[in-house]
Length: 309
Ligand SMILES: [Zn+2]
Image 1: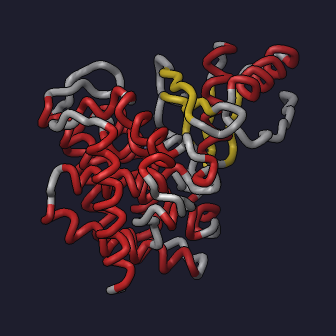
Image 2: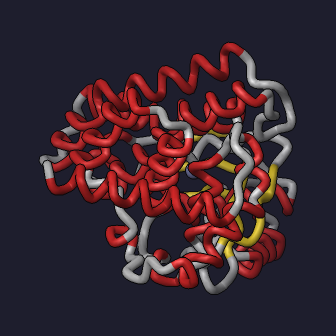
């Protein structure tokens, strides 16, 4: 029987942590790396396996993001801000999801994954409208658009029921469908459909220390709200905002941990959003003033939705 060596993930998908895991794999002569856990542990395993040129098997224990199926690793600084994205030439070799484990994970984690997945359709739509490239530099195909749309429809039809079942630890059909939407549909959907405003807002928000306790998908969720406000898409706002509130996803800056909403305090965020290449996949020409005004408008709409809950 082959020898198995366990290493505990140290908490951040940083250059240092990726190199630590890679060098252990090298020292032990590992044939394969298995990444077990949440998005950051998974991203670390994917990057370490890529750099060590060994296959990677992914086993998510929560469905909080689309990290399991994607071929990217988001690298954070030691301080917790997004620093870099590593694009691997292939997706993980094998992904094993035990839905029974995920059904017993905290509700907040699956809800965060739903927030990440909800952005997929709107970001792909923006890329299609502007003729922007997807995450691997190709055009957005009809299939990619179809995956993104199916992801959206699944979340709307099964998302809230899945959260109720997870509250009771029940692995129902709703839960199975949402796990597929959060991991497979969202993962393939964003890579093939492209990213835009929602993830640019996420990346910008990571600059603020007070948002570091929030999940990736929770920050992306506010980004989707910002994107829909920029696009003046009232029809989808009316459908999606009540869904976000019921899912317990953050729809205000305060819910993200941001209590100082002054222009000065948010300037580093709005500038980071505008410097992010993904924002150029929108029809509008972004500038920090416009992003700041939209943040406040999205925040006001979000607060109103919370009050009428
Ligand atoms: Zn994401």
